[in-house]
Image (cartoon, rainbow, N blue to C red; front, side, top):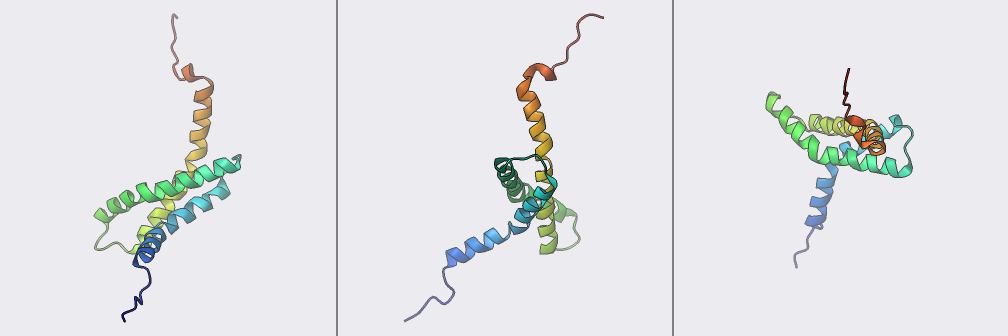
Length: 117
């Protein structure tokens, strides 16, 4: 009787895929130390945005950097790109939220039209 010694292959593949996003998640959580004036819901939202940056933007940035990297890019550099992408993505959230609040309060405030002299 042949036993499956390797365990569940689907679970192993899922864990391996999730482990590639661990540096991005760490960057998103670390950047919470630099963000003030956010509610719990805002902090959860910023972690989700940082993780999304690490999932979708970081691979594109890593592939772009790989074009200019001499030889094969080491996995540590790819992980650093994911970490920094999530960190920067989270840092951009508070200014963006301030802009949205200002725009929601006065949507026509962005249009500055002067008539006359």
